[in-house]
Image 1 (cartoon, rainbow, N blue to C red):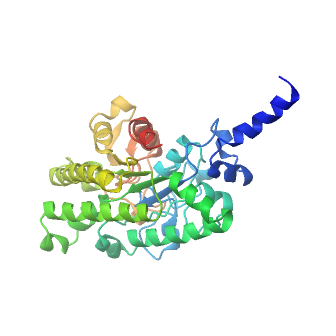
Image 2: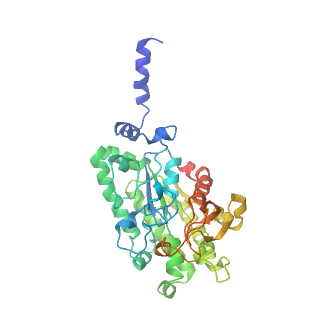
Image 3: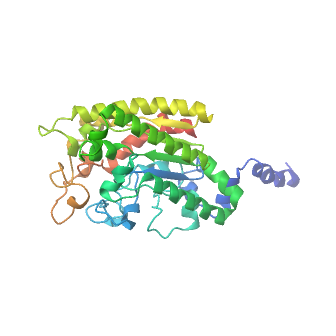
Amino acid sequence: MGCGGSAALPLLALAFVSPWQAVAAAAGNGTAAAAGGRPRVPALLVFGDSIVDTGNNNAVLTLTRSDFRPYGKDLNGGVPTGRFSNGRIPTDLLASRLGLKDLVPAYLGTDLTDDDLLTGVSFASAGTGYDPLTSTLVAVLPMQEELNMFTEYREKLAGIVGEEAAAGIVAESLFLVCAGTDDIANNYYLAPVRPLQYDISAYVDFLVQQACDFMKQLYQQGARRIAILGLPPVGCVPSQRTLARDCDPARNRAARVFNSRLQAAVARLQGELRCQRIGYVDIYDVLRDMIADPCKYGFDVSTRGCCGTGVFEVSLLCNQLTAATCPDDRKYVFWDSFHPTERAYEIIVDYLFPRYVEKLL
């Protein structure tokens, strides 16, 4: 091939590059190269609770926080970041799988670069839920405030790349929504208000409606790829077990009912919005199997966490002054009494990615 033909190839290739890829290249985004290719999406934008909060609560006046040791002991030289685990959490692991970056910054309290904004942030706040009362009980950000932050984020994005390119980035990005566990565990079964207003079935319906309204608001703001997680087996989380240390059947039943109704609601929403890339992600079965048969996954302990006794220590109670950690957290499914270890999260994300996330890309 002559010189003219070889010079035309880059021009031809540019015709097939989406606007967000061109913007990422112009911004010098080298994260994809580390993953061995182009990112699957321009950005990962995350909403929800402590499972996906990478440090927003550090900037919130609340006791629901983890910006102290031993949290983060296996990440960044052991410097705590506000992640509720010993290391990376699903937000980070999913971003890696997407070829974006290894760590997703929190939107609040972080000195964000243009590249951070272009490739995604977490708006999640530990302790929050679909029910506005859930966040009020522990003084954290309600889901509506996470949406407000996203609106502000869009304005910042437009300031970097322009309105049209920003809209394209939002439309092609993956939105991850993870909430509801705190509504069941720390609101309905702990606080005295909601049980006086709803039986558990009616409360689940209320939560599902709130989740649907949240997805609709994301859609109205330009989101077109939304992965919404169901609930884990809440009753098998160490802090939620019975006094006999068995899984609590009522909490697990509530989680299963929520998941079933949310899955049906997502299917209806796909039709209503004519958007097939809104998808339900089931995390119940894989985590339940890890807890029931830990040896199958290389774990030794699944009924208590690595921090302290592993039965009640979470957030402020999991600290280096009063709660020693286990010798090897890789042998534990749970880090504290509520949150899995990085290794458990790795297994969960590896399981979920090809079964659910791939279909939304």
